[in-house]
Image (cartoon, rainbow, N blue to C red):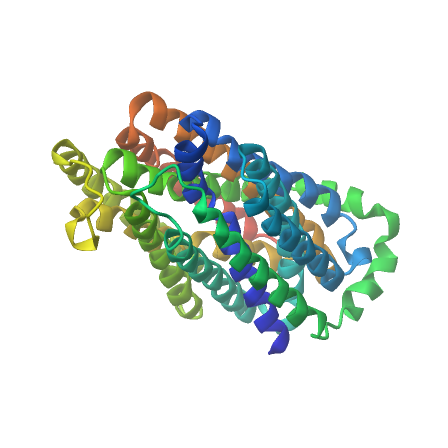
Amino acid sequence: MRLKLSLFLNYVVFAILLNSVGTVILQVQNNYGVSATGASILEAFKDLSIALVSFVVASFITRIGYKQAMLTALGLVTVACLLMPQVPAFWTTKLLFAAVGSSFALIKVSAFATIGLVTRDADEHASFMNFLESIFMIGVLSGYFLFSAFVDSSQPQSTNWLRVYYVLAAMAGAAFLLLLTTPLDESQVRSGEKAVGLNNMADMLRLAVTPVVLVFVLTAFTYVLMEQGIMSWLPTFNNKYLKLPASLSIQMASILAASTALGRFLAGFILQKVSWYWLLMSCLVIAGGLVLLALPLAEQAASQAVMNNDYGWGDAPAAAFIFPLIGLFIAPIYPAINSAILSSLPLRQHGPMAGLIVVFSALGGTTGSLITGRVFELYGGQAAFYASLVPITLLLVLLTLFRRMQASMAQPAA
């Protein structure tokens, strides 16, 4: 139980930091005069760091040790957070997200691999994976309110919001101490390590070219491309398109995090009784319908909107509440497919597979944010979010193909 609590706290810390990128994209445009396209590079600093470190580390994560890797990550991010308010500049922000991305790679690969050590079977694995991801979204939700508490909408150029990083440094330090004092038995994995030896990298590459894994990573890539594109640009959409004040724009983006957290929490129970495939297919169809319902409402609201710094939640248009509910329906996809592939593999392959998950998720996140940012700048916020219908449609096809291939594997799926 103490180990699970440690994993939860680690995820909360990194959820706030990773998904603050949408808030920070908005703030660096106000503070440092960066364009929308220029600000979108922050997603690349975060996600490409995740991808690179995951690829390198996943091949020998068992030799480093899951606990040691997570402690290193927490220590690094504590230092990076303390640097932010001391040196307020766009390059420092890039450095922060590079450090956060590198650290999260260590955290996520280790956490995903550790789940196999603390769960008994595929059903428990799928359930815990959804609960862990729901905790991640609760962290994202709390992050919106934490950051908005430090943002002064009446002074857009103020850098006082950077003081939030002192709070985040304290949280990372607390997570470090909890993990340091929590035992983790890695003997099952270390005993299998001898059989793999120096071939871990080759083992991961062989795994990557397996047909079912190729379809899986393309599915994960597409999902994260969609999710991160929406999540990273929702605060800017609220502020620049719906004309809400900056602080309120950040707060209202929390609806997406809250609905995603709720979706994953409920999926943790539903997946114990319902096939993951039929749940996800139903959710995607509903998500597509929600896009077609919400964005026309947003267009109507935007045409009548006038920026007012006194606006509160009660003054926001219906579209600001409806569109973020897409999180409720896309939420179960990522943890469900991750669990399906991991629970189909032996324990010794969980580390390399987790590395592939993180690598392609990171690449998807970067691609999604860059595409959304570019479309947002060229064609406006409505077109940028209408584009989410493309990955939704592609996911319907990929999930069907993945299910057919995954079912043919030796061990049953989650």
